[in-house]
Every structure is written in C-alpha cells, then in structure tokens.
Amino acid sequence: MFKVFKSLKARNGGSHSSLNANMVTMNADKAAIKRKPDPSTSSCSIQSANEEIPSLQQSYITDESPNLLLYKRMEKIIEKMQDETSGVPVRTVKSFMSKIPSVFTGSDLITWMVKNLDVEDQQEALHLAHLIAAHGYFFPIDDHMLTVRNDGTFYRFQTPYFWPSNCWEPENTDYAVYLCKRTMQNKTRLELADYEAENLARLQKMFSRKWEFIFMQAEAQSKVDKKRDKLERKVLDSQERAFWDVHRPMPGCVNTTEVDIKKACQMNKPSKGLKKLEIGPPKLSPSTSGLHPKVTVESLHKQITLLKTQLERRNIKVSKAAETFIAYFEQYIEYDPFFTPPEYTNPWVYDNTELWEPDKMANNISSRRVKRWAFSLQELLADPMGREHFERFLDKEFSGENLKFWEAVQELKALPQSQVQSKVREIWDYFLASDAKCPINVDSHSYEITKKNMETADNRWSFDNAAAHVYHLMKSDSYSRYLRSEMYKDFLNGSKKKTSVKGIRSIVSFSARKDNVI
Image (cartoon, rainbow, N blue to C red; front, side, top):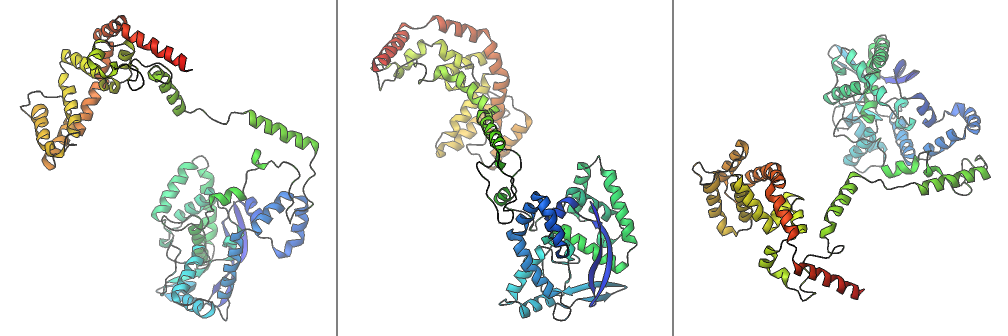
C-alpha cells in the first residue's frame, strides 16, 4: 500500500528541486500490471512478458484503450505548458508571512492556450482547460472543485507520478489512510471538508476491524511529512489532495474515472464461468500471436461437460412473487370460467337468462359463492348479497355505522360535481359532527385531518383518511369475527344444502354442449 518514490520534481520559481516523498499509493500489484512500461526497462519487460502471457495481454488491452490515447494527447499539451522558456509562467508568490510555491494564475493559463493552441477564442480555451483540469493535470490550490477560472486564481501542475495514464485504481483502504493522515496534521488548509468527514466516518465503520492498522500507517506517513521542507510539504499535500479529488470527487462534480458499464463488461470479462469459454480454436491477437497454448482434446471435453451442466441447470429462480401468483391462481381456479363451468351460463351464448334475474340469484346462493366471501373483505363487499349479510352482522355487533360511512364515502366519489358539496356536508353532519345521529369511531389524527379538509376545501376526497381508518378497522376486527361467527357458518352450510336443481341442470347442459362442440 505504501511506495517510496524519490526525485519528484516540482517547479519553484523556474528551478527544479528534488523532493523525497513517502505517500499513500494504490495497490502495487495492480498498478504494476496496468502502469505504462518504462523505456529503460523495455528489454526486461519483453522477457518477462514471454514468461507471463496474462500480464502481456493486460498491458496490451491498457495500451490500446481509447482513454490512454486521450491521456497521451493531454500530456503533450501539459509538457508544452511546463516548458521553462515558452510554457505557462510558474512562480512562487509571496503573501503575508508565507510563500505559495510553484503556482500560476488562470488568466496566464488561458492566455497561453489562446496563443499556442488551435483555439478560436477564450471561451473555447476555457472549456478545454476545464476538461484537462477534470482529469487532474492541473488543479486549484484552495478548492476541491477541479475547474478553471479566467482570473487571478492560483493553480498548480500535477506531478507525472499521479497522472491518469498510470492507470491508478485506488482502493478504499488507501483513501482511509489519506483521510486519517489529514486529521493528524494540525493545519487549516488540511482540514477535512464535510463530504470527506462523512466518507471518513463511513470508512471507519467499514474497516472497523483493521482500523488500527490504517491508523498506524497514517501516523507513520504524518511523521515523515513533518521532516520535509515546508514548501515541499505544501506542494506534495496539494498534489495528493488533487489526486483524490479526481478519484473521489466531491458531490456534484464530474467523475472522469468512471467507465461506461457496457465498455467495462466488454473489456473486463470475468475469467470464471462460461463467458471465458471459447469453442473451437482461439483467435490470435496481434500482440500475442503464437503465445496461446494448444487446444487439446481434454480441454474440449471439459468445455463440452461444462456446457452440458449449464444446460441441465435451472436458470429461472422461483421468487416470492411467482409463489404468490401460483397461490392466487390456485385460489381462484374454481371461479375461472376457462377451467370451471360458471354457475350461470352466459346469456349471450346460451338461451339462459338467469344471470339477468337478480331475484332468482338472491334466492339461490351457491356454496361456491359464499366461500368466496372468505377470500378477502373486498370480495365480500363486491357481492351485493355478501355486503347485505355483513351489514346485518355489523348491526348485531353495534358497529353498522362503519360500513354505512364507508359506503357513503364511496358513493361521494362517483357523484356529479354539482352534488358533491351538499353530500360532503351531509356526511359530516350524520357521522362526524359533535351532534351526529350516527357517530363513528375514528382516531384523533384522522379526525383532525378530515376537519382541516372541511375548513379548507370540502371536495370529494375530504373523508379519505377517515374512510381508510374505518376500512382498516373492519378488515382487522369485524371481518375476522364475521368469518368465525356462527352466522356465516350457518349461512355457508345452508347454501350447500340449497343447491338449486336449475343450477345443476345449467351446469350439466353446459358440459353436454361443451362435449358436442369438442
């Protein structure tokens, strides 16, 4: 997690100074694979690539990525900007009792870009500067927002060690060490921002088991930082802060390190599972031609076995939603005319008009119809006979006013607008007023909301809260007692005995006609 790097050059008034640093870096193994190879060690890297094919393939993917081509073009511009003779003027600014090393102003930067780059005006130069700053190649020294202003704001160049072309993949542990180190340094410029303090608290909770190790690392780095020169420490602290502003940006800023999910899936396919399988001879890439192992019969047999196993495995997982649908279908299959003959045939298809004769339907109530009342309160109230029977039960329980109030509210929602206001006042006077003829039992919260609705705007939705409360009371209390009551059980048993002969004949005739059609 640590890596000591030396000879970090920083421009200080036109001169270079060698800066020794012991800073938080990313996972060395990941960075070594993805970082650009050093030209001085190219021969060694070629030799090691012949021994380790995966490393060569990873390096090839990284070198040919579109992002790296973009980084190289931006770095060429940065190198021109840092030229000592024709670049952006970098200087050390003296302020009250302190010095600000290696900075340049935003106006100097925009002026240089208009003069040396192929841009039409200052607006285009400012837009290009925004894009380069968002990738962290230069940054404001006193702000976490990586933007550029065309004024006297001070900016500083990022060290090449932290350039995005090195393919850093910082981990949360590295970020935790950096934030913890910032809390140890008693400097106003190093105080944590609000979002950084929240991130530190979140990381401390995430890494609670190894926080002592992280704290020790941060403490060791803080001690090393104190031994540096004051100006060197200022430069290194700001560069490290800018690095994390790129990889852990503040809320609302653009994260340039994010990769499109489709591109990420194409570039970084997992090495396990069927996604890595290749049927037939492998395709050779330009950089690894001749380096692939030979395809053997055993490897092909393994691929075939794995594919067969994948085909036999069930890919569809039965979730709770599917189980709920199955339970609903099994409950209502008896009432589905596609699977069970209906109690009354369709008069548009057959010469049987019993469905249009409610008096006969009321006298001949089948047990199947009564059993449906036990499915839910909604099913009970949807049946006129079930509602009437439930109303008689509530009158015995001295709570019939609840159903009357609920029905009145439902009727109110279907009235014409011209009758709404009078109906609202009628419902209030009959059920909720202090001298109501049929008062209902509602909680104080619902009563206050309803009273407020009456005072502000008496519309068709004024009683919704009170009606919802009353419906919940009937569903949780009255309905369950109704299903356990002898009144419902006797009615259910009586309907079983009173199966009408006409109902049986209609079902038989329906079945016979169905057989003839088949």
